[in-house]
Length: 298
Image (tube, rainbow, N blue to C red; front, side, top):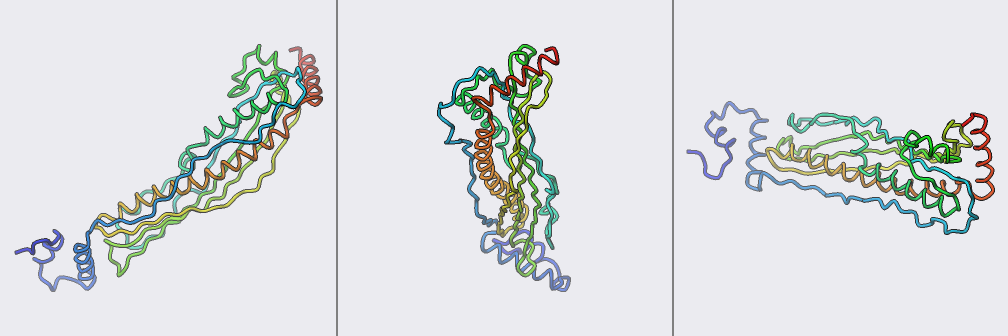
């Protein structure tokens, strides 16, 4: 008769001749028996706190600049986000096959879901700053190609900001199993993040696209790391731990990147405020743009 309260694996084991078991089989059986008496579905981890960036710049200048008749267009920040060296490297020994998962490259959305909001918020504040500095803003556009012929003809110059983010995100995952018991142990992942950032502002005559100036902000790369781990006691706990750790790691890394985006946002808006022409400089650039238009017969 099978013992009541035992697991199915114990029933099968109990009905086999004892001499068929190796020492390792006995050790695994002992581990499962011990775990059965202490709940074979225990899974413990620490949930990281998410971070939502604010994308607010508190020092937008008040109206103190002389109004000019230079008409400008502001183009939405160009550039992209790239993730490199992101294939998950695993160093795991004696794991169930399911726990390994499938290696994959991370996308920009895995790193942060706020890149689109980051760029649209920059455009919003850039337009505010231009107005406060006395410039006449024809409109904000997604790109130069989105401007009509009449818009390009009536605008003296277009301001084109560009922001690029490159995230190097190698991942290392490890696991440990006390006494080689494959049904209990821990699983942990760490991701080292190196975030490269560039920001520039180009000012150009929109019909010819001839540049009147380019200004670049030199930014150092930032480095940070994020990690997640879980302990499990279950015949399927390894698989659950893998999913739990990967989700927690994603949350932790997104929080780290989102904080860096907040910092980059403030640096970009501060630089844009400094680079933006106004007053006599805006009038001089207007004259240059009109000269280009006349030479090109626009």
